[in-house]
Image 1 (cartoon, protein in one colour):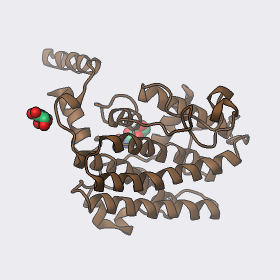
Image 2: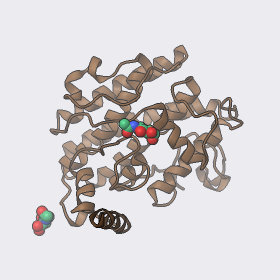
Image 3: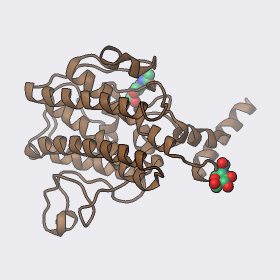
Length: 299
Ligand SMILES: *[C@@H]1O[C@H](CO)[C@@H](O)[C@H](O)[C@H]1NC(C)=O
Ligand SMILES: *[C@@H]1O[C@H](CO)[C@@H](O)[C@H](O)[C@H]1NC(C)=O
């Protein structure tokens, strides 16, 4: 019993100590290229299942490399147009995984929780109260696009953050090329939502715009490094050149992209601390950066 209590105390203490892996390991290009593989797996499985009802195990099993199948993945009830777009995104992600894994060794697909409950949890956190009925990302096109709003943007900001840290020009070329397509996906998702921004996300009395604003605010809170995320409507002072409230693309005061570090990204996808796996990655993200953060906290 005593051991039990002290290990809880240890866990709590370790949560309160800010952890920095940079003092403990030297981050290499390989680490920086492997880290986003986690997000590419997440996107690939969410988009593949959403559009077709099956994932990498059917489409490109060699890329899953025997990693466990995602929890709760399913086909979404999408209109023909949305399904077509999402299917294209899905295949693009397959290419991204192949491109990363043919440059660095990488790792097998990590365990992913892309269940309806996992997305519902994000939405409940975004609104700081449970939504009734429970949010279901797979129920229709608008819900699926809102769930999609959660993902590529996080990868995009990570790529922007990684480029200045890279040494080799081949690594920079790969990341720039991944970034371009990832930001294209984010722009398409945002545009499709922007067109419908004043509509209510039935049965909730909440507009599309407010959903995006809340999700972005949640990511800012979890990232804990100021404003790096903006919904589809912002105060005019935050819009492009301080002149518009419509915000089809997110950007800083000069409309340059925000960047995020791996720690910020892990806090967002785990749902709280970068050292405590959870959220979309119940057993944590793989690769040296993510593993070192967890290991540092217990070692
Ligand atoms: C990190 O790199 C620096 C400079 O190359 C070196 O002095 C240091 O020992 C390295 N640290 C680790 C933990 O490998
Ligand atoms: C998946 O996420 C939901 C919501 O957070 C959670 O209730 C469920 O236990 C998770 N499943 C696994 C296997 O981690």
